Length: 428
Image 1 (cartoon, rainbow, N blue to C red):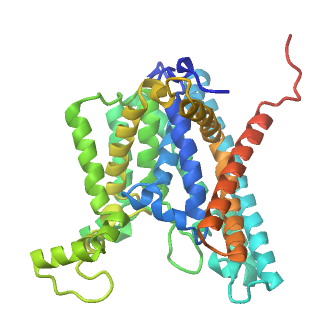
Image 2 (cartoon, rainbow, N blue to C red; image 1 turned 60 degrees about the vertical axis):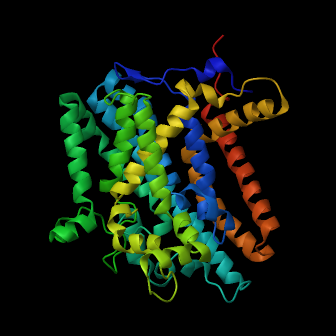
C-alpha cells in the first residue's frame, strides 16, 4: 500500500513521555538493514560504496541511534504508564529475548560453517577459521561457558551483546532523566569518556578503561563497547523522549553540518582512494616535497588516519563517529521533512508511483529491524558461500545482493505477520 501524505505527517516530538513514530525512524533503520547485509557479506564488491566508506559513521550508528529512538517509544511508555519496576521488567524481558536470539544465531552459523568445512568443497578455505571459531570445536567446554556468560563474543557476533548491554543501562537512565536531564547527560558523557581507550592511554591511566572481555584466551575486548556506544543510543532515546529539543532549521547549522560531512569525507576511505590518484598525489608531492615510498606513500589521508586512530575508533565509539553521524543525521532529518513528508513523492507519474511503492517496503524492514538483522547475519554468510561457488563478478554480485534484499523484505513481512497474531479471534 503506497504511503500517503497524511501518514508522512505524523508527529515527531514526545510529549509527557509519549512519542509518536514517524516515517523517518523506520525508513532510515530499514536502509541500515540493507547496508548491514552488504557489509557482512564476504568478498562483496558493493561494500566499496556503502556509507562507511564516505565518512566515519556507518549503518551501525543508524541502527543504534534509531533503536534508541524506538526504545523511547516502546519502553519509555512502559516506564511512564506502569512505573519503574514494570518498565525495568519489560526491558529485562527484551534483553532475555535478544540473549537467546544471540545464542541461537551463533549456534546456527557455527553449524553452517562446520558443515561447509566438512564437505571438503573448498579445501583451500576454512569457514570456521574465517570467523575465528576453531577453538569452539577444538576445546568446546570453556568456549561454550564463555558463550553463555557473554565472556566469549567473536567479532562477527558482537552487535547484539552491545545492544543488550546498552538496554540494561536504561532503568538507570530513566531515573537520572527524571532527576535531571543535565545530570543524565553528564553521566552518559562520563561513562563514554572512560570507554575511550586511546584517550585513557594518552592520559597514562589505561587501567581505567571500561570494557568487557571478548575471549578467555586473550585480552581482546568486545568489539562494540557498550560503555562507548550508549552515548549514541541514549542520544536517540533523549530526542524521542523530548529531553533534548529538536535542532532548528538554521542556515548556519546546515552549513556547519555540511562542513563536517565534507571534512569527514576527506578523512574517509574514499578520501584515501581519492589521494591515491597519481595526478592528485603528484600535486601533493609538489606542494609538500613529500619523499615517502611504498604503499600509501604521500597520502595525507593515510597519515591522518594512522596518527589519529583514537578519534575515530569504532570499537569505543570515538568522537568523530559521533560528530559525523549527528551532522549527517541532521541533514537527512531536514531533507526528509517534518514527519518524513518529503519521503512521499508528489504526482502520479511512473517514478513517483514506483518510489511511493518502495517506501512502505523499506518502512516494513525498519519496523521489523531486529528480526531482519538476525536473519541478515545468517544470510550474509550464505551469500558469501554462494559467491565462493559461482564466482565474483559484476553479475554475481548484483544477483546475490539483490536476491538478499528481497529475502530481507520477505523476512520483514513474515515477522510482521507473526507479530500480528492472525490466529487470535478478532473482536466484533
